Image (cartoon, rainbow, N blue to C red; front, side, top):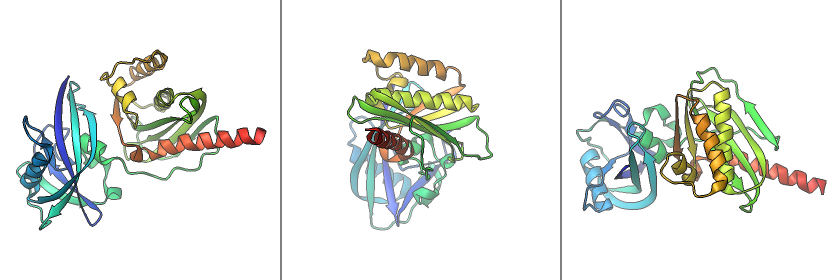
Length: 294
């Protein structure tokens, strides 16, 4: 597998983020918006490269650059390429007037809540995270599931999953949220798992979510979770050293084979709040029930 390192800039003004629309590139990124930045060349220092790309692509001058995150991403078009994105929060020195470079034909200052997912490149979605939506209150705690009726195609679905253990090992739960291609919640579900570990709970959430999306008739699914371990193991980057995870990993792979395409994408925890909320509500409800019985 090839690795490529890239720098990207989150430039904000009046609570809006600067996005650039690609005028060149392969079909999957052409006409899509992304963050300013580019590949790190041999011998480059990240912050020097960042300043160069920001100036070249936007005409802006970097004032300060604060390291925000480092994220791994497997290119969906070239599965043998792993990108390592170094993400910075950037302030601008001087004028904020944008002058586009040759690689872009349009720019936009967007509030996060106004960004539509279909306007972004896949890497930009990962770097920016996903807009959050309100999750209805969960009442059941052993096995829950609720559909939201929205008229839309279910052939492509987005699946957010999360698992948690209070004690590791300890009381655990798995939660998942299914969204359609418009990023609307169409199903939410989860299960109390008993005593297990965080990693086992994360895997259980992926399995439950994939079973549900298959039941719903999805042909392609984008699975998003904040467990980098599970993402890298499902993408074949990490070996599975814990034998307790082998059976469920194989079960998930057998589920994946029934779809046309399934991708596994890492997102930061703050962009996985819906599935995380499911887990906490299940565990809280279980704890209250156990306390009442005592």
